[in-house]
Length: 362
Image 1 (spheres, rainbow, N blue to C red):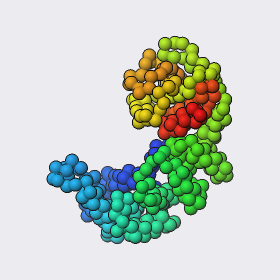
Image 2: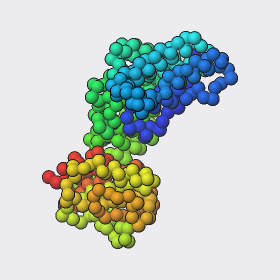
Image 3: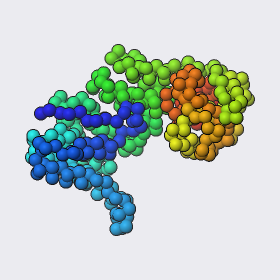
Image 4: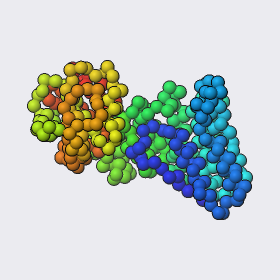
C-alpha cells in the first residue's frame, strides 16, 4: 500500500505538541475529492470529517451542559472517530485516503486519552505502537504519531504544555526520538524548536546535541551554532551602538548603574512582541532600565503602550543590521540583560527574563 507524507507545519513554528492541528491537517486531505474514490467512500469520509468538528462550547453552555460533561463528550467523540477511521480503511482499502485513515485512527484515539479518556489508553497504545513501528508508513508520519504518543504518555500535569514551559522534558523526548528514528529532519526540527523556544539552559543543551551529531543537517547546525555563539558575549560589555527614536546615539557598553533589559522586537508582529511583556507582572523589579529596539522600523514610537517605561531605539535594517547579526538574532522577541556594571548576564526569550534579571541583580 502506497503512503503519502503529511504536509507539515514549518519546524520553527512548533511551540508545543498539538494533536488538534495534526487531526485537522489529516481531515482536510479529502478535499477536493478525487475522481478515483467511490461515492460511498466520499460519504463515509465526509461523515468522519463532521464527527471531528469541534464542539461548540457556547451552544453546549446554553443547553446547560457543564464543562466536565463537554470534555466527556469530546473524549467519546474522538474515540468514535478512531473507530470510524478503522472502519473506513477496512471498508475502502483502495481509496486514496486509506493512509490518512490509518494515521487518524491512532491520532484520534491519542487525543481522546489526552482529554482524559484513560479507559481508551490501552487501545490508543496498541494502534499508535502498531503505526509507529510499521515500516510501510513514511518516516514523517511515523514520527508524528510517535511524538503524539510520547506526549500523551507524559504525566497529566505536563500534557499540552509548551516547550517553553517544560524545556528539559521536551529535550528528553527529542533525545528518545533521535534514538528511535536517527538523523531524520523531523528529529532535528524538534531540536530546533527547543533551541528557539526553551529556556536558555535547555536551549544550549539542545544546540550542543545538534552540533555534536555527525548526521545533523546543515540548516540545523547553523541555527545551533548561532545559539551557542550568543553565549560567547556573557560577562563582556555589549558592543551595540543604537539610535534612539529621537535620533540620539545610545552606547550600552559603559556601566549605567542599573540592571538593563535590552528588548528586541519587530513591528511585523502587530504588537504581539510588546504585549508579551504584560504577562511578567510583578516579577520585574521597578528599578530596571529598559531599552526597546525595534528591528525593521523607522517609526517615531511604537503604536502600542508597554508596561515598563524605557528608551526606544530603531534598527531600520532589521535582522540585517550589524547589531542583530552580532547577536545572532533570528527571531523576536529577544532579550539581552546587562548588569549594573554593563556586562552581559545572559540572553534569551521573554520567559527567561525573570531568571536573567534575578541573576543580574546578585
